[in-house]
Amino acid sequence: MTTTVSVVIPVHNGMPFLPETLASVLGQTRPPDEVVVVENGSSDGTLEWLREHDDPRVRIIVQPSLVSPAQNWTAAVTAATGDLVKLVCADDLLEPVTLEEQAAAMLEHPDAVLVAAWRRIIDHDGHVIAARRGLGSLRGEVPGEEAIRSCALRGVNAFGESATVLFRKDALQAAMPWDDSLPYVIDLDLYSRVAASRKVVMLPRVHASFRVSAGSWTRGLSTRQRDDFNGWVDRVVARGLIRLSGPELVRARVMAALQATARRAAYEYTLLQSRLR
Image (cartoon, rainbow, N blue to C red; front, side, top):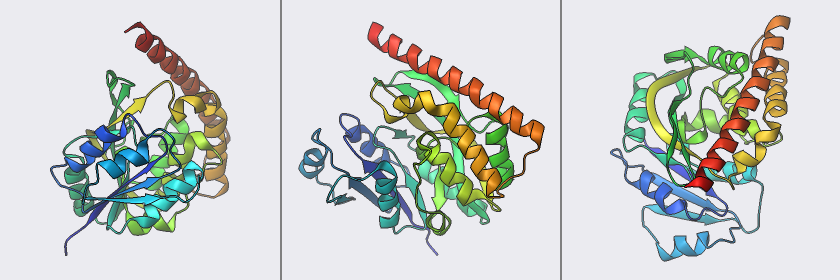
């Protein structure tokens, strides 16, 4: 049986990055079986560009009115028909071999519900800030609980942003909807629901570039990183997805604070370097 792959791109004001993002999706060595773009009330010419550059490989869905990011991401995933699904934000990029290698990993690990990989961090202009991030010490097929615990105890999202992750559609849709009540950890919150009591695969390869820019949604959330991460730790413990001892909870909070400070410093340094160019 042939395994099909969907790539979904929820977008709100995606210019000027959407054309490059879409090109990286369509230029895969293993082309996606479908690409779905869900346009959400853009005012920067995104919809006009999509209509002007109509591509038979791309299905465009237009939200009738502006919805929240979580609602738009949920709509994008719901529209997917493939056996495997990847959500790519409109300013991120895929490596040419991403779908080929991640789909192959899914076939090699039939019990796994998602595949994650390293990501590269780039700035507004595409300059590399960090050549490789993610996974921690996790490699190959691991229990989902182990991956979730690793995130909690290190104060980071070891899975990476959505462009680095490929899901089995049935497992992803069973965990829907996306929830932005803790917006900084919107990805990690869903990953933990998908991965709980399942297997995940961690591939030590760079499969996506995550863009940090002055106007990005993530940069705007950086000041609340610690509180949202702590809220996520409390949530996964309360739901019984992982168990943490008292000392481990203290460690999780200390690491969340340290990581938040480091990330804010990195954002400000990136912004300064961009201004100096």
